[in-house]
Every structure is written in C-alpha cells, then in structure tokens.
Length: 150
Image (cartoon, rainbow, N blue to C red; front, side, top):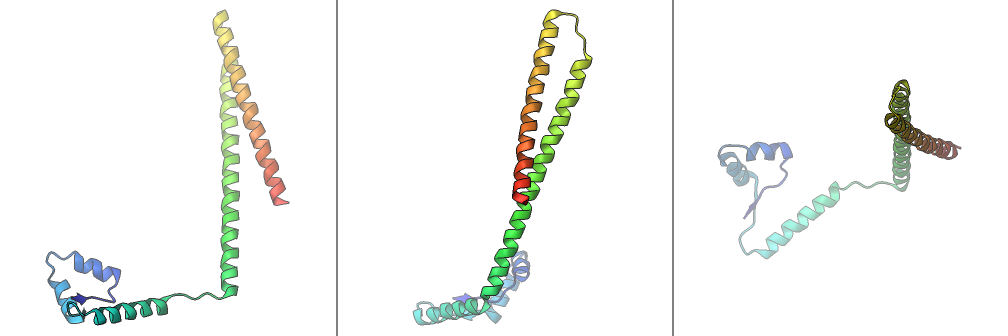
C-alpha cells in the first residue's frame, strides 16, 4: 500500500478534479510511502511517525497567553450580548412607533355605525394594550442595561 503525505488542500483539489487519475497516480508513485501488505511493523512505524508529526505541529499556549485569550473571548461575548440587547431595544421602539402610527390612523376614522364604532374602540384598546406591554418591556430592558453597566 502506498500512502501520500504532505499534500495541501489546494493540491489535493487539483489532483482530484483531473479528468483522469494520471497525475494522482504519478504523485503517489513518486512521493508516496510504501508499506508492504501484511507488514504490521511498518504500518505501526508509519502511524507513530504521523502521531509525532501531529504533536510537533500542535500549538502550545502559555498560562499567560491562555488567560489573555479567555479575557478576550469574554470581552467579545459581553460585547455581543450588549449588541443583542441594543438590538432588542431598537426593535421594541420600532414596534411601538408602528403601533402609534396605526392608532393615529384609527383615531382619524369616524364611523357612523354603532357596530363600527364599537369595533374601532376595541381595536384601539387592543393597540393601546400592546403599546403599554411593549413600553413595560422597554423599561425593563433599559433598567437591566443600566444595572449591568454600573
């Protein structure tokens, strides 16, 4: 069996996209490591060599570097959480503005029929309740943000 090592992703993509396997076969024959069939010792030696290469290629980070990395990740997470809160606050403000606009449109209508007046009144009440609920959510978010910033 022949094993090809040290092939970059780009080179492998190039070799595997060829219409024939000619280039791949040539590379395996010229650069591949040959392990005879049934030779367990040679296979074990190859595996040991690959494991050693992987260990050498691993990255070792000092305690100070790891602490700095954790601190940086925490700062990024805090910033992302803050942005999500700001985003939610903006969404609530936009929804309140939409509901107020809809309420103003409803107030500009003057139905003459009693049923239509009652339906309009109910719709206005529902919109006012939605605005109140969103305003409460907005106040809670702002309160939470001010507490977490202090």
